[in-house]
Length: 96
Image (cartoon, rainbow, N blue to C red; front, side, top):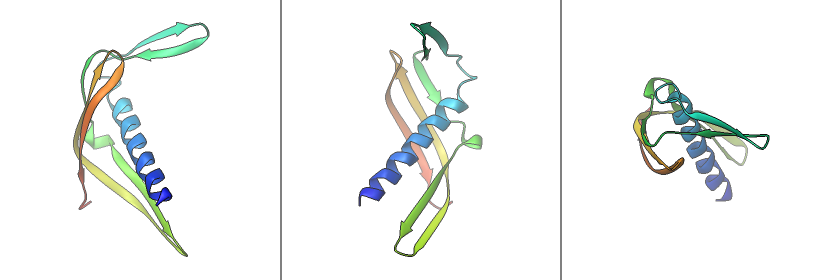
């Protein structure tokens, strides 16, 4: 059960990172360098998922058996406010 939670967390993280990287050209974030640390600041608004370059890779294991594959996303978006993700929605194509 613990491995399932880890796998789900990794899938969500990959989706978030793919979403942010896919949208980096649509609204250029501001990069702020403070005290030897670089911070990326995103503009407030809705960021849409670039579905042509986004997918979720998965890997499952059980005793003596493992599988892996990809799931495609049909749509998705994030709402950014005050440089934080406030909410988001993904539609996953489970038939892929």
